[in-house]
Every structure is written in C-alpha cells, then in structure tokens.
Image (cartoon, rainbow, N blue to C red; front, side, top):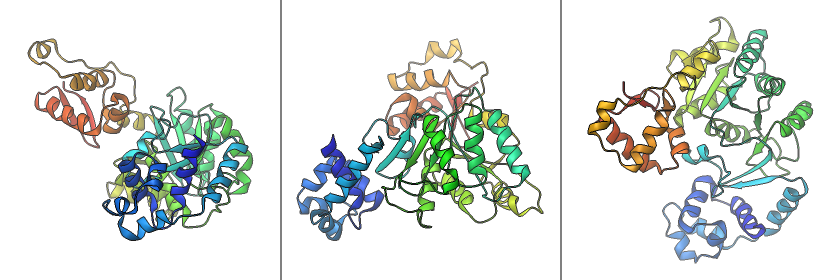
Length: 367
C-alpha cells in the first residue's frame, strides 16, 4: 500500500503532466506504479502525452519528496484518496479536470447521497448571514453533507451553522493540511475534523497562493450535487464556483438580493442569465433536487403487462420509483452501472414511455 502511495504522490510531482494527463495515464496503465515502470515509447504513444511528458516521467527522480509526504500522512493520520480508490469522491470522476490524488482528514462520507456546496462573499452583511443560517437550520434531518471553502464570510457561517445543527460539513482547502487559512479559522477547522472534515489536493508545505483558489473551487463544485450562492459580487470565487458547477452539469441556485447592493450583484447576475435558479429557502432546493419526501409514483400495472425490462432498465426503474425525480449523477452512483449503460437504459425507457427527462439532467417515472 505504501509503495502504491509513493508512486501516486510522485505522479502529481512530475512536471508537465497535470490532472487530465495523469488520469489518462492511470486509465491506460491501471496504476501509478505501472506508469513509472512502462517503456518510454509506450507512454509517449498515449494520446496527449507525447515525447516531452514521457521524458518527464522516465527522468523523474524526486521520490524523496513523496517519501516526506508519506511520513506527514502517517504522522497526522491523513487519508490519501487516489482516483482508483472506492472512497475517492465519485462525483469528481465525472469532472474532466478532477485531481488524481486528494488528502483528507475527517469522518464524513465524501460519497454521501446528498451533498450541497454553500458559497458566498467574504464581506457578507446581516442579510446573507440570516439567509445562510436559516437555510442550514431547515436542512436538519435531510441527511445532507454541507461543503464550502473555509473562507471568511458565508463559507465560515455555513460551516459554523452546520456544526451548530449537527450537520456534517467539509472544508475544501487551497493549501496543504499542515496549516489553516485564514488562521482565525483554526479552531473551526479542528471542530470540523470530528464532524465533517478537511479536504485538499495540495501536499503539505503548500501555501495558499492566489492561483490555488480556482483549483479549490473546482473541487467544491465537482464534489457536490448542487451549489448554492448566498451573496456575491460580480467577481470572486463564488461566481467561479457557480460557473464551474454549470460546466459540470451541477444544479446551481442563488438567493436574490437588492439591485442596489453590490453584495447581491453576482447572485442577481446568475439568476438573470439563467446560470442559477432563484431560490428563497431550503424547500425550493429540496423540491428542485427531488429530495422532498412525497409519495412516489409507480409504473402503471397495464404498462407492466406489455413491457419487459432488461436488468439494467429494471435497476434504473427501481431507483426512480423511490424518488420523485433524480439527477443523472445520482443515478450513476446508486445504480453502480457504467455511464454508457445508464444512458442506454434511460434512452430505451424514454422511448417506451416509462421514464421522462426533465430540465437539468433530471429524470422521473412517467405519469
């Protein structure tokens, strides 16, 4: 296991590779170790790799840095999550630029059935604070994991409110797990480890440089089912996270604000340009996500007499009968079928009138 981890960390250290190419290499060779042991010509023949990247891999020597990181991981009981691990956040696998390796300290399930990211401005006002606290209070007993970026403002309020209401919450960091930024959130971060966790793609001794934050934001967006924006200007991390969420086919929601308030410009912009659905509370989000407990429709008996479902189609129908509607990413997770098998089953079920598609990649049993 330790040998696997050595090569996994080393892969993230190789110059010129990056996340997309690293994942392509792992998909081809099956493991990080196999990449380093492969012939140079075989590596460079992979689409997108070429001679320069293959040369970087075959000439990589800095395994001592990977060994240092393993010592840090062991000392502080950190959990490394590689893309081939079952405990790696599976929603991230659907994002083309997801990190091949994550570092995690906490007890929350990163593959929880419902995950919401709550983001917003660092310079919030009382309006944003009230909205955020009320939203989280209304999500108690919904078995939802709250994710944010542990920044000042709305992020911190989301984490603190989650802890107050015994909702697990995970902070995604733009630096290594050897520090907390901002340092004023050190106490908050320690509480989160026992009721949620801290997650990062960055190794120890990585400082919170400006360029790290967009990468942090893509994890916040990618790990979640939905992104909720509470107060945001037209520039900043919240808008970046929302845009990334749209690119990942996530559901994006925003609370509207006064047109004269600069803190609400970003939210109003998202709503106006159909980049986010307008919401006024938790009930709107739960309904849009199909998470409200209502009596679930079943396939009519007459239809069952005439339609013979394949095993894959039956799995999809059984899942849909338990929820009023469901996002395709959740279908992937719950069915444990390949994306192509889910797509094929949904297509056939739609053609037979068993399943209906909804906006936002949602599906439900036809009435």
